Image 1 (cartoon, one colour):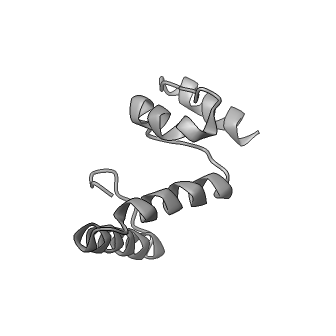
Image 2 (cartoon, one colour):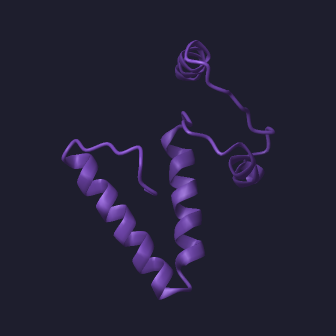
Image 3 (cartoon, one colour):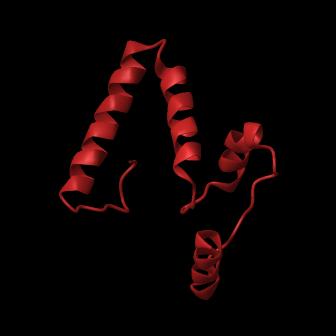
Length: 89
């Protein structure tokens, strides 16, 4: 139901809608190709994406530091009610 509501809202404001190819293992490729502004998703999928990001940065202390800095900054702003559309995170 959430997916339908999001699709309809995007259609009403002239947005584009894209769909993944059906293979959850290739979702990263689909996200790279589609570059979504908005993506309704279940928590399990978001956890999977987060875990993949964590595993990719685990080998580099600099990448891990930058990722955690960005995540902390975003969480802090969201807790204060600040929602930005002009930043990289």
